[in-house]
Image (tube, rainbow, N blue to C red; front, top):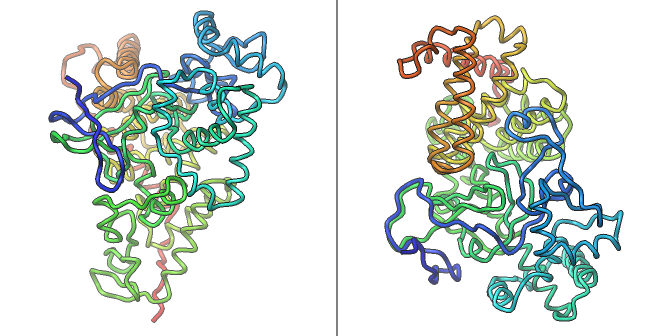
Length: 509
């Protein structure tokens, strides 16, 4: 019996519903071979165009969990790459025989991922599949409201039509297809949530949005897995998130309206702005300040802040921009500005985005010790507040943390050396948690869960070889985990101290 059925969702059009009660962390459906997948722009040389395995060219932390062996390049078009001859043969038979000729004519120009996706769909969709795609929303009228964007989309669709050489579909039909692709394409990721491509299939497009979704998507190669994040009742709608739920309500609503042309009315949005994603922190009593009360006031000590809200919003916008495209100096400056205000808790955006940006920039500069500290703060102080237990983001952050721990343990900076952390025990403790989480977030039989178990076993075997006393008996209780984790927590406390000035912003009255 299928776990789902399609029905009309109130105010949303069609939606996917549970045909029977579903437990938390249960697989709802999988899509083994979608209608369309393509590597993301800039990753064509690193991602197999058939099975979507990632072979990272970055040999830093990603090498801990990816194979860095270069892919095989198509000798014809010299654009697409494959992980094996078998993948190359399969893709050539499916679509690349025709696609290759198009890319050869355009060489050395590399088409954008959205055009590559549309061309693949033009070349492969049969009449039945075309009918399924046409049932998806296109929101042409909505796209046309923004003239600059609409002109660009028409140009991209015209290019897709011309490059494909199709005579079966008109330019108008390809424009509609392009709109449907933009609206209904997911970001394809590795099992550890690294974005590597675009994923299009009508089956998953039926799943509507909620900021408090009851399901989550993970990928294993080109296979999509939809799993329950919490218990789902029979006949309850199954939902995922289209917008990052850690951002304030006004940011999520703006993004959903601009990209997907709807206003979210989920329970989370209905509670706004009395949410931890929206409120600021009173610098006097640490109570919540609700931003839309005029004048804003602390709901705990009732101090009013009539002139402060605009300043906080400017700081917030500056921090968001720094996280997206700022330099290392911009990121650090914004972190300090927001923390020194005493009014942004660590879980409140844009602080999580700034810490993630800091990690990325520090890793690129080989500053593993500093990157580890920011990542540890995210894992211990931010993520548990922003995500439910065993959410894929939580689990994957833990796995990457184990990689950073492994790197830092080989040469810890002075600030970490003085804590005398038992690094092997800390690494093993994290992997125990990740293994437990991966079985729920990705599934016990998933390649990711098995890979984590293999990594954990490898650490254990190495510890035995090096004579670690606590690693001699596998099933024996291991003492001292709490002590080591407390030391690790000290690292976060120290980072917070360096970012926080003791002088809070003062209220103007």
